[in-house]
Image (cartoon, rainbow, N blue to C red; front, top):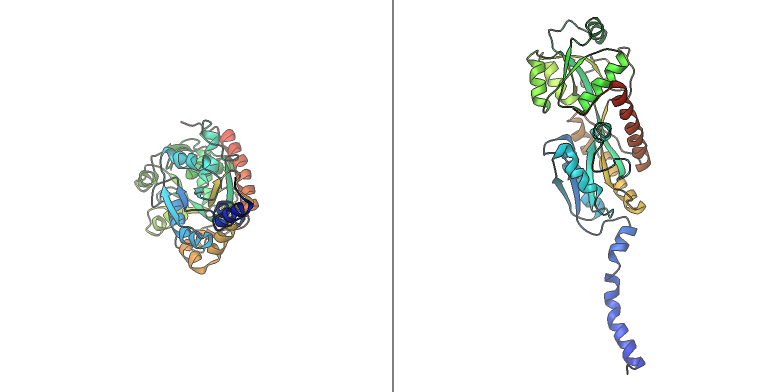
Length: 328
């Protein structure tokens, strides 16, 4: 029979080990993951999402007190990596960088293996950029109003290029078509490079491109910029009017990028990761690095970012329906 003295002695010997047992729970309660963090990029290296992930990772590592590893899981237009995050445990150890196509594609892909509204926790909007509407330099359209007049005079005769169906450039131009009440013929390509090549080769009339990609073409005289889809003129190209200034006020052309986790990320973890990312965005070095890519820091609360995601899911579903865009 075990004596009372033996029981007390055994209990005393076990006491030093007890603090080791609940450490994961304590770590999560304090807002820190309990192990290395994988920052998933559902696209190939050198994309904007990849660039942001590699800039952010060291700051997250310092803020969370855990190693942060960037992992590119490309494939199926981002679906493979995104599905991985949707199925991950919400313990802060699996995060993801996404861009605005995340909210544009669901209406075009009804059989997605995840639900952008239900299966993820929006953590923070990291950065935003904008698109420019370019035309080939020989087109008889010196201004956006000229271009609209040309399109109305020749419905369906002007072609525009995009990197593919459902891409941000495609959806932005379709939104502009609805706003301006014009008919343009969409030519989808497999990627930005061949689409730009045909714009430069004057085989298509127009294209929407991110500012960082558009400006070198404009400055080299290879394309003409008619407008920028931004609330105000770009300091990099102050001569280019906004769409609103040209007479076509419209929302929804922001190329945002954000940080997500799996659904049901605990509040302490959510707040801690958000704070670490906000601190990174406030750093002058971060702002300079983003500006070099024609991006502006965003930031804010998880609630703010969730509202943006939910609103844009509704808005792009409307655009797809009204424009009659199909998955093909």
